Length: 156
Image (cartoon, rainbow, N blue to C red; front, side, top):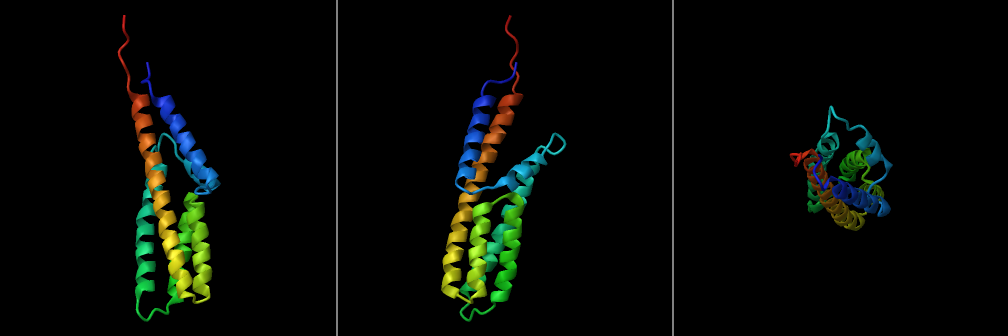
């Protein structure tokens, strides 16, 4: 007999995903990423997203570092970092993060430091929201897998 509790956890996951899609945090690319996960790679989405988080932390640090330079003028380098961030965000379906990157890049192309600073604040906010919600999703998924795998002895 399968453990009780896997179905409510699956419903919790579905509700959280529906919310993230409704809010525009995620797009269909995230679903495509999920479809690549199978029994041979049960942690595929988790692993890809964690690589994204690791790389994104570095990009955010680099962007903040560039903008905090007293004599900042390297908008081209900022554009390179933003293009990387946009590409990786698109690849996991992080729609709102990608959209903020687009606006940030537009400000950098206009050499608008104030606009870049505002966009960086928004980017950090959207990134943190995404990261927290995906960690929540992965936590529920882990609980669901554990609940589904628990077997109870049959009572006579």
